[in-house]
Image (cartoon, rainbow, N blue to C red; front, side):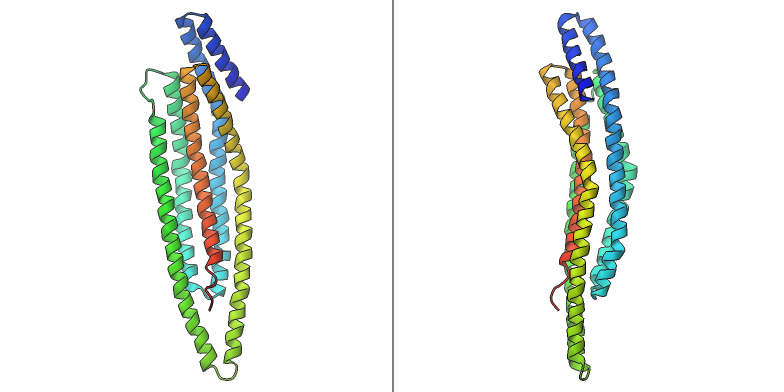
Length: 283
């Protein structure tokens, strides 16, 4: 694809140099249409890759939730388990709705606007794609940031509550159960320590699986972005005005989708790390 676009850019620059304005304008229009079609075939695959990845991400975290909840219940972290499950379920539900009802249609709509702006130069759409991208990224980034802060704060408060309750239970077992109270209390602490190791193993495995899910899509998106960057540089050097705009707008939409991918994955990694770190407050 990069070869096809580069050839089109060179032909456009050559014809503009050796022919009249009318012929150059006609060929520029045909070149932009061909470039749009060529880019669309790959850009559609990118959107579907990101869409599929977000669906897999939500499915994996939905499957991970019962494991996290069971380990936390086993360790006596009832409040933390409830808060964690409710918060993650809410985030997964919202992300599922966004990736089905917003990310995919928005990416397609912005790419269509980019094509219209490049092919029909009389339509005043310059900067529209960039403005929408900036607005979307500000809103989505703040949503992730605020939700991460609230989620972390809730987990810290819930862990403190569980720790206080467990200390009370341990004290009661050690002092009010005749003869074997101390033994039961120590056994309880040993079980919690063992479950702490289980949490670390489950969290490490979850993060590794998340990284394996992210890697193929990230490589595909990064490769397409690199190709767009190189062809955009070539278009600027050859002074292909509409081609420059089309490539810049397409790259802008691609970076928006890549940011959604990374922010979503990072939030879930943060959630798993928090899950492994809330064990033990020593009881």
